[in-house]
Length: 128
Image 1 (cartoon, rainbow, N blue to C red):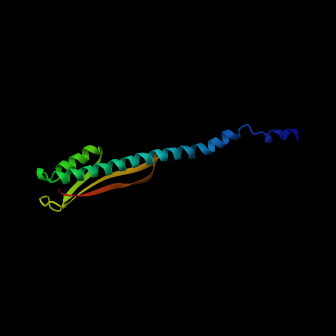
Image 2: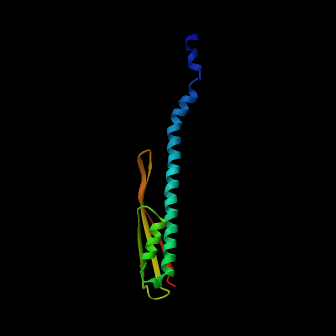
């Protein structure tokens, strides 16, 4: 029985378990970080459209038909955001103004794209 005594030793058990669990743990942590980045972009997009809709609602007398609101949204949400400002009638108080912004995103973990698509935020305000 002495020659098989080395089979009962557990010297490398922790290293073997770590080698099996570490890639999964790293992928999980990187996924959480990527999700956090995507969520931050969504919050930025939502806040920018809210501010743009408010700007369009209170500045209808400037005659720019939403150009100031579009510029505000693009300044608050830097990057490749597409912005659209539309109103039913710019000259009638109480008409709706709709600001829509969209952003193409992709969540990748270790080079693999897990999820991709377009985030869209739409805000509606009444013209004052």
